[in-house]
Image 1 (tube, one colour):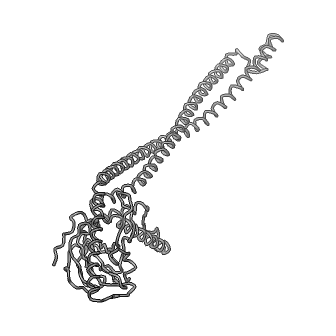
Image 2: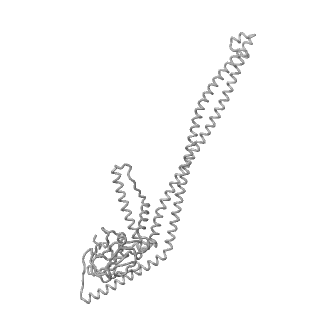
Length: 443
């Protein structure tokens, strides 16, 4: 049994995916809560459909990012996903800060309005108090004047009536004079009594208003105190949101700096991977050349299998689950397009990997970026050379030169080579050139 390189000690894809899931939930703003009424079946159905749609979107996004991360180290993948998660949280944190600051501003406006109302109420209280004091002083003056007039009448300084004026008059002129004085005193007394009554009525109304204003002032003070407390709490919330945002921005800067520092190493790794791909192509070309020589020497022209889908699912995951397509792919860190020469299939860690179809094991060995690789030569398919490789395996169950049947165990899935997590990178070669394996796999 050939020696297999051990799985990388870097963190598993499970941690990456868990963080990614958090990121995606944050991006989508997905929240789930039970309906207010347990018996509301329509709400339950809507919630279930929403959850299913959210899960499907999340699975698709996870698969897409898993594909983007294939071919870079687990450390870089973690940094990339962490950065994606942070960048997803930043607009959420910014929105939370905006809402918190708006709440502070709203509470401050309401506190200012309350302060203005309180100032106006206190000014009204002072004005009413001054008015009551002024009216009370005026009433006291009137009462003194009425008392003085009463004493003057009592002493006889003023005639109490027209009859008294006639009886006390010494002459016609004296009568007229005493009568006029008596009438004037009577009018003055009557006016004073009316004014006193009016002042007392006004004061009663003012005192009632003053009581109401003082109650309003008390209520406004309580409300203002509560509003100021709310505003202070909102300021603390805003400060917390600002601190959280600052932490995220600093973390994003740190992750970005780390990824930037790794670009040179990544570029070198990509160059090495291209060299490995070229070497693999050369190895396959040599195998095909030798096959053609042997075929010509034997005078044979084999067609081989003609099945439209010669391969079966090589993983233990049923139904088969593709996480990344064949074709050009944007490098998540370096930012340029590169060829992804196979499909990535979900297998998790240490699960069985099976031969997609029968053939001969060309080799089972470690090939740098491919990790532990099993290459199976299937002979001919529609007259063309057909081979397949199974990459990033944790261990082998076959060895070079061994014949295998379709569905036979080749080894176990892993994370060896340049890989961010456990999966099967499956490649198919027709006449030595890679082709999309997906249409060739019977589902």
